[in-house]
Image (tube, rainbow, N blue to C red; front, side, top):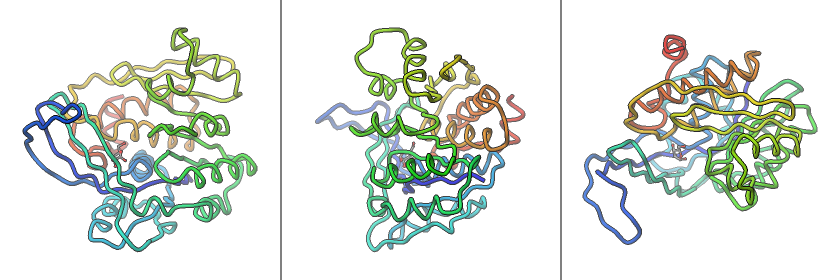
Length: 296
Ligand code: RIB
């Protein structure tokens, strides 16, 4: 059983031929909406990978809430930990360019109301060997409480450092496993000009944890206090990379939950993340286990 403590959003998506710079206006193409939010995306990815998943999250009282939760419900994510707060549901405003690259701004809405009480509810009853998956789109007080309780209860905690916050470096040290992209890891282990592999090994040894860095088309790399691993991506021509990192995190958590070792769990997650780049939108693009098996 995987427990996810995190955000849910409705994504408002516009396509553009190129991403605008500050102060610039560029002509756009299509507008669409899709369910998103890093917590919800990762929960759905773990579920589509085949895990039993509980999501502790918040939605608002606006008309966006139902759309934000639709795929979670359809795929059987346990939403017993859903709280409804008066006001808007979280929103992400996303622009995607012709190469599939994106920029995202998040307006937290109900996600901002998550706190220590929600973390305590999520950790209630969790025991050693269970998996807790967290990101950075709810208030840090909730994430910090979840990580502290996980450590005290012997739960394996996986912290995805997206989106990176000022307090992320301190918080990351308290997780069992950290998943960052290259930009986030540079912020996490700042100052050093060493090669990525050396910086990751130094971080893993210093904090006694496993750190994973996702590398887009180059797959992913992990360092533990004793060894390093690297796995390839699956070659694709991306149309939209939104949610690819979340797909990696959810599939990776599901792999660990199913008893896979670090390398096969990462290999499966990297292939799932590549496949998530083939379809527009975050949640609609998350592949099912059968598609990942076929690609593997
Ligand atoms: O990681 C992708 C997600 O980031 C989107 O679904 C959006 O909601 C933002 O949270």
